Image 1: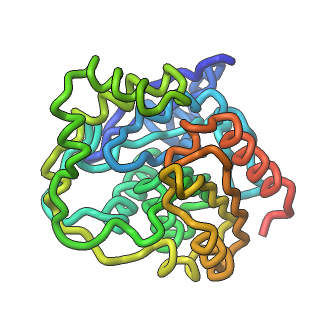
Image 2: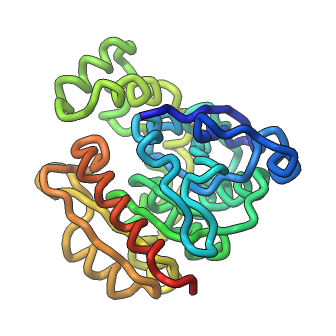
Length: 297
């Protein structure tokens, strides 16, 4: 599989990585639309808490060049894929003020505007990133063509300062080889490509992020009636660490204004795409193929 070409950039405090098909060459129209980055991206990837944009790179080749969705923009076409570092994560800065889905969604809207996006994009998010994606779809529906939500915390991130979790403090106390060894021991199903970006991201997160107040919003439940786009909710088994239960998936499916597809992946926990990469990608491709086959709304 050919790996897409990657460039890096920054919009205000948010760092991002733009992946393009390896054979794509920016032309004059591309440059006019999105400065030096070429054509606007068609797919936005949002990572989970303590991860970074780099954590998506193992699956980026499988998501590139999937095709377009009717008249609602493409999925990984010539515009490619943009993956962002959430505020306080990766190489992004941490502005003053609270954190949470609303602030993160506003950050993503800023990036999409800066990259010249004029048609809605497909947004794929994991955990915290899935809450951000859901919030973006509910508050800025004109920006989102379809959603893929990977095991979002069903009751949000909680309100008020939380403090650095003990598990994160323990990981940050290890050096990089130690974190790699930890991942190999505790996540034997993960591919080797998943380990370095995961391990590095744990030292990149700004610990002050964990001290910032959040919001009490429960996006999976509270925002469902405002989500009008097609949505895939993919989740794992609760006894393996998955956060979404079948009852949560059913509640969301019934409450959402748009069509919701729910897929529980046996053998996966909270990290569905890492635990069962093949099953995750099959679910994503099948969902996007189905959405693409429908007439534009």
